[in-house]
Image (cartoon, rainbow, N blue to C red):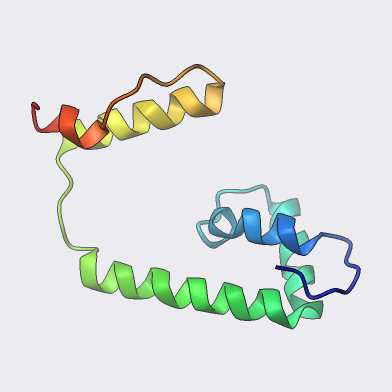
Length: 100
């Protein structure tokens, strides 16, 4: 998606990293770039608002379920592998967590 207007930060970059922005999992400088982009790009601002609303709804409806600690550890381990660039073994994390 693109609004067709030139921006310092391209719409596709903003949308590709929208959840990192929503979760504040990016450097402050990048957050500032995204905030500036939203000020001048109404389609991206609309998408941001929609995703923010969905995230709040999911948290309200599902945020009270406890995640088994072993499942959380396996998921976090897989995330660490991906971030470090290592190959990730095939298989379903949830199946491994329930002993399947």
